Length: 185
Image (tube, rainbow, N blue to C red; front, side, top):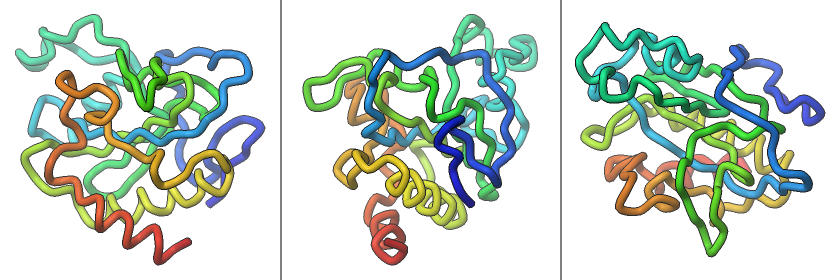
C-alpha cells in the first residue's frame, strides 16, 4: 500500500468522496493524526450508517438517535470498520471535518493540520486486533509520507476536545498500538 502524495489518496483503499471537506489553509503543514471512535446508532456496528453520515446520506427516520443529528456534517480521511476493512472519504491534501472545536499544544482548529482516522467502536468496549493492525499500517505510511508527524502527535479526539469528546475511549489500547508501530518502524 502506498499514498499518492500529489492527490492524497491511498492506492489500495477504496475511495468514496465525502462532500464534508474543503481546502486546507494555504501552507498548512500536516503534522498530526487524530484517532476517533464512532458507531451509529451508538453501540451498533456494520450497518453502513457511518458511511452514510460521512456521505451526507443518513436517513434520520431510521433510528430515533439520528433525529438528534439531522444537520451534522462530518467526515474523516479514513474509516476502519470492526473487520479491518478501510474506506477513504477525504484525500489527505484536503481538510476533513472530524475534530470540530479543538485545540492541541496551543493550536486551535485541528482539522487544518491533522489527518482524521475513525475506528468503528465505542468507549465501552475494546477495539479489534485487526483494527489496530490496519491502523498501525496506515500510521506508519502516514509518518513516512508526512515527516512532521511524530509519535507524540498521534492523539485521540479526547486530547483535542477534552470535556466535549471522549473517543477513542478508555478501551483504546495506546500501548498495543505503540508495540505494533515500533515493531513495524
